[in-house]
Image 1 (cartoon, helix red, strand yellow):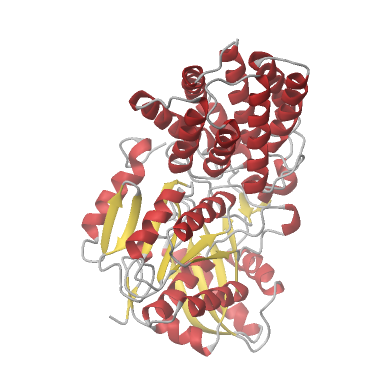
Image 2 (cartoon, helix red, strand yellow):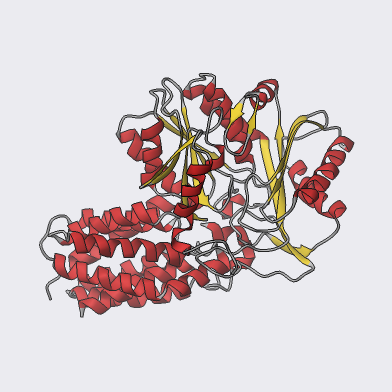
Length: 333
Length: 209
C-alpha cells in the first residue's frame, strides 16, 4: 500500500484539518464528533439539509457543504457510516427552526445510524425527516438484498434539494422534492481496479488485467458480475442499457446525465465515455439537457466510472441551475 | 459464581483484547463479502470502551452493559455500531439494577439482545448475519438456565451454539447487509458479524469460569 498518509487510524481527522484550512471561507469543521458545517450555519428559518456517510468518497459529502447545497455533512471512518452522535450534532448545529432533512444512501450501516440519530433529534423536539436514496440499478432481486444502493444520484439530489432549501421551501416541500428525485434517478457503475482502504492495507479484491467488475457500489466491494473489459463503445452501453431498461426513462424525455469517475480514472476517459453516452441517448430520442462530468462520488483510487440519469422537469432544471457555492461545486455566484 | 459489575467489566476488557487480536481476521472476512471494515470498527469501539472503563466503571452489571452500548453506538459506525449497541442496550434494560446476575438473568439478557438486533436490523435466521449466531446461542442459554445452570454453564452453551451458528453461515447466500449485493458470490464465506458474535460469547464464557 502506497498512500500519502501517516497513520491509517487518523486519516479522516488529518484530512479534515487540511480541508478546514483549504476552505475556511465556506466551512467550519468540528472534530468531536466530526461534522462539516457551512460557515454561516444555522441559517434562520431555512430547512437544514444534512447528509453523510463513510469517508473515501470525496468530494462527497463534505465537498458539497455550502450555500445552495448541504448545511452539514457527517464523515464516518473510511467506508464506514457515521455514528448517530455525529448526525445529531449536525442537526443541532444547523437547525434554523425549520427542521432538518437527512439524505441517506441506502446502505445498511448508514440507514441504521441515521435512523437512530433521527430518533435522538426528534426527542430534542426538532422536526427531522429522512429520505433514503436507492438509485443503483445493478441491484436486482431487492426483496432478497438490503435493497438498491444509493450512489451517484445522491450528488444530484443534494444539489437540487439544496437549492430548494436555500430558496426557503419548507420541510414538507423539500421532502417531497427529494422523493421525486429519488423516483426519477438511476445509476450504474463499473470498476477496472479495486481500491485499498488504508486500515485494510491491501486491495479489496483482485482483477486480472482483462477483467472488470460490473455493477459496483462505491465501497470498493465487488460488483454483481466479473466480465471481460471491452472498448469504451462496449463499456458505456453496459452501464447505460440497464439504466434505460429501468423505469422511468423513455423516448422524448429530458435528462441530466452525470458521468462520474470513481477516483482513479482521468477526465480524458470520462469525457470520452460521456460523449458516447450522449450519442446513445440521442439515438433513443432522449435529450440531455444538463450534464455533470468528473469525479464527484468516488471510491478512493479505484479506476472506474458510473453513469447517472435523472429525468428532469422544469422545476428541477431551475433548481439545478440555481447558484451553488461549495468546495466541489460552484456556479452562479 | 458471582457475576457483579466488576466481573462484567473484566469480561468486557477481555472482549476488547480478543477483538483487537482478531481484528485482521474480521477485516479479511469482511473484505471477502463486504467492505472490509468490521475488524477495524469493532477494535475501535472496544478500545474506546476500555478507556471509558478505566475512567469510570459503573457500579452495576446493567450499568456496565449500558456503557458498552453507548460507547459502541458513538464510536463504531457501520451496521455493527447500532446493532451491537442495541444488543447491549436491550441487555442492560433487561438486567435492570440487580447487583449480581445469575444464569436466568443472563439468559434473559441474551434474549433481549437478540430481540433488539432483530428489531433494528430486521434480519432472520438464514440471512447470513450475526442473527445466525445469536439465535441458537439464546436458545441454548435458555435451555441451560431453565434446568438450573449457572452463568458459566449458560454462557458456555451459548458460545458453543454461536460457533455452530456462525459456521452455518458459510454456505448461505446473504440477504441482508452489504454482502447481499454479491448475491450468489457471497456463498462460501463465513459471515464476519456472526463470527464476531461467536467470539464475544466465547470470551464471556471463558471469563465466567
